[in-house]
Length: 80
Picture 1 (cartoon, rainbow, N blue to C red):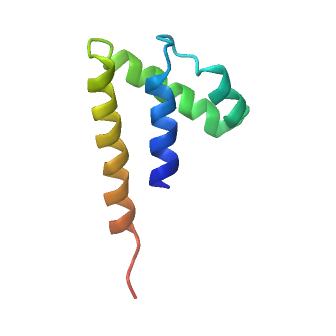
Picture 2: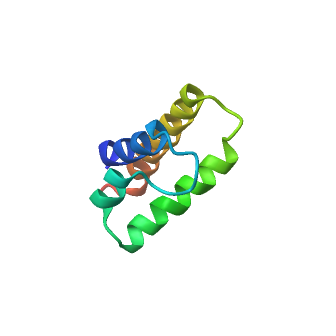
């Protein structure tokens, strides 16, 4: 899951597009589903929030966000 999330976030931030649209290869890969619409909305929100930062700073923040999900999934699994 972490690898998939990191890959998606990397596609989003490495892309040269500044708008809320996903790059064509990413859009083709994700298809037209609820998940792809959520990814596109998330990209738009992040682009808006991080518009004053450089690409490298955006990558750092994207990795921090991706790593935070790793900790959430570890604590959400009950141990028997």
